[in-house]
Length: 152
Image (cartoon, one colour):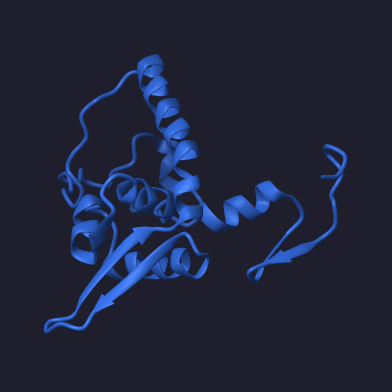
């Protein structure tokens, strides 16, 4: 480890270039979906693709497939294909994947504390679109903002 605040030089691990271990960690588990996938696999052993997708209703099939492939490529999950008709595929955590769970638990605790501090309100279910209000300017100043032509 180098001196705090001073880059250690570029390195590469499993195809990812980075300057410090935090950068590598974020490259491996960063983003909106990877931590959630790992979180949902933590207690169940394995999950099928459709079961994983149900735990994250906002994720698209394409995005889930991409994130699972990246997690598998980085050695955090296993993908087991069963020779059945129709084919069955299950995903589970590897040892390095299980090593991340305490970090995710700490993030979950932070989220609960954040809720307690700042409050929580109900939100619509994923996929629910509230009725849109008409696009009317609220003031004269908004009539001629860049990119918007005033209708007079």
